[in-house]
Image (cartoon, rainbow, N blue to C red; front, side, top):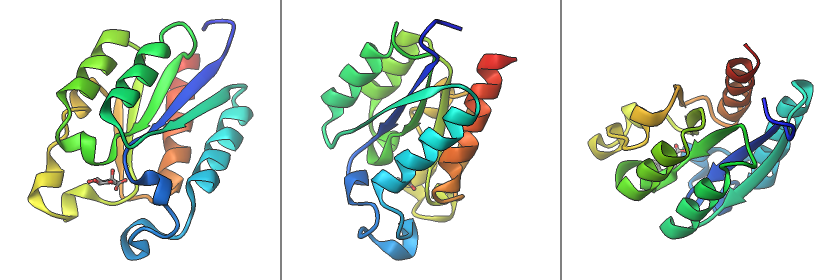
Length: 148
Ligand code: DQA
């Protein structure tokens, strides 16, 4: 572990609208609620959290690159970029930190294009369909990986 004991939580496009965006699929928890949940789960394991959300692919790449040296691991919901972004996947590979991929919805029970993820090959674990709790599971798993 580094001295910082920090995790980076990365939220992709449209996740700023959580709470009002297609609540039948994504529920009513807001992005702040999700980040609070991550902070609480991380704090129980002695970690602090930095959270970033962007609707722009390059901003996500920048945030992932900046995690090298500032975070020990990454929880990422790349949202739509899951299914399209070689750049986000390459950034995760480049920094080489442990990654847990999260999706609020069960992407495997939706449209076929959501079944493919460029990110999953770089993830230690993928959690899909557990709603906001998926972020808690992701933080718990990531901190266990880092501690054990
Ligand atoms: C999502 C699933 C993606 O397919 C979608 O584009 C999102 C959110 C999820 O959390 O379920 O924006 O990553």
